[in-house]
Image 1 (spheres, helix red, strand yellow):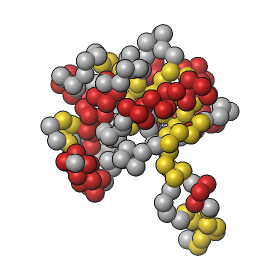
Image 2 (cartoon, helix red, strand yellow):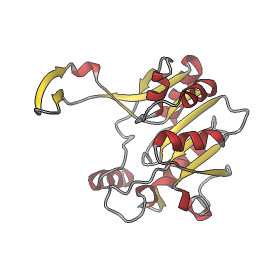
Image 3 (cartoon, helix red, strand yellow):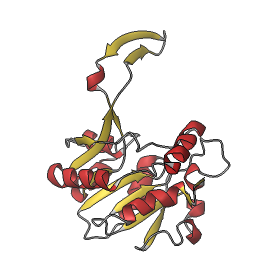
Image 4 (tube, helix red, strand yellow):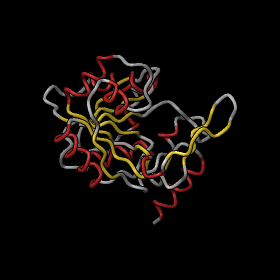
Length: 218
């Protein structure tokens, strides 16, 4: 199954959540969900939305062949994922968590994370950093060290987990985490890395939306 975390942000400068902005003839959210709906291994879809949108059926109307269930998000990302996780079917064995703001996830990438999570218990897609990374002292704003670039990988979604692994990480109730892999890491379980995709962009700024429109035209 999949838990699609739609989030609350409107960082592209719009008055509505960025995931509900149009991208071609569909919204960003619709494109993200449809990618999983097309995948033969996906059996169940739960979409986590801001509470005020959970009763808005037209958000995904006509986009999926499978029925979608909705869950109300929380204040933190991990709260939202916990709400979505609570709504999944009891027979689910592997759970995928995906940012709705990544509308170009491919079938091949979805397959890679499912296979890796089935084997290792947890998997995250990532791409190698193209830039030199500096660690800075916050107080002095002086560079403390340069981190070897080949050690830096940029995490993406969908992240995939065996049900028991993610359940244990959620139950541990760790401090704020920026992604589910972080929760799993803190619970003591190793997370495998699979190759992500440069096209699997996350739309957070106006320039990202312009790039997404360029990809769509191509």
